[in-house]
Length: 360
Image (cartoon, rainbow, N blue to C red; front, side):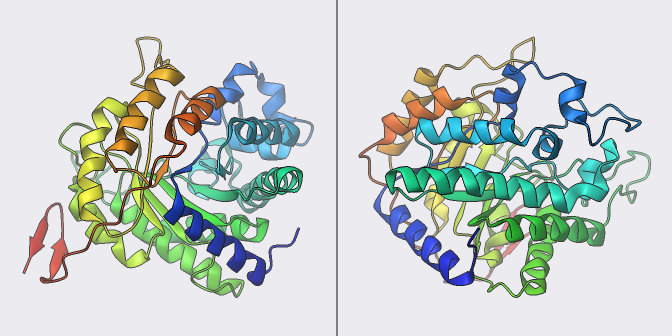
């Protein structure tokens, strides 16, 4: 696997050129496809973890180590659907998230193998047809927040510290970077302080392995909790952007959230505000009473085509409840449509962000 700095520089240049030329499509959910395989506990344990004392079923990230061929087949299905960006199966591969399964000591390996599997699938596809794709290393929000109290009777109580988050993200990023990712995808952000810790951890990881800061750049994607357009930690979208703009993300936007119908006006707001490419990959609607997603590929792709026609998108895809059929429909829907022109940023005032924005 050639993941030298020069190769990464070339691949990043191709990515930026393509981003300026057309709308790029990111793949859909991995969990939906895994669930279609009716996996049982033994699939998650494999031989390696057969004697572990805790149930692993539902820990899809451990499949990188116990069912790597299945993980590769999911990536292949999204390649066949036409995705430009393949995301690693590492959304929950941090020490913090994996501690629930007592798998935290395997986190760096999970990320390395997850990146290697995705990279190999992309490499084979590029050899077949000569078309460049990119691997995005998925870094989820963890299951703890640094800025919100874990006990309503004790406002100062936190289940995790900034330094613990920083270290957890550093270890995950090390595995992803060593495994050859082209981009780091910091996604489904609910707490901006968690994201700030991740950014520092990623910088530390790059320094540790001597990787230039501009290599494997960040895509930052948050999530809003209701029609107010605020994140779980209470920020408006503009405050969210200002808080994280120092990370020099190559794209910035939203995923998961409220499905396409609830997300559109928030993506429209971001598209007016930010001077970098937007990314949007909503859920396939909202969960029904059985926790399932009902939105069809045709319905989702039709809506996202309208977004593209209104010049809201640079990178687009789908999140929870989606599958390769959704991705194929989205690829077909946005083909030939021009990417969103970048907004000019207003630098005439000092902008500060808490929950809201203050311009001075």
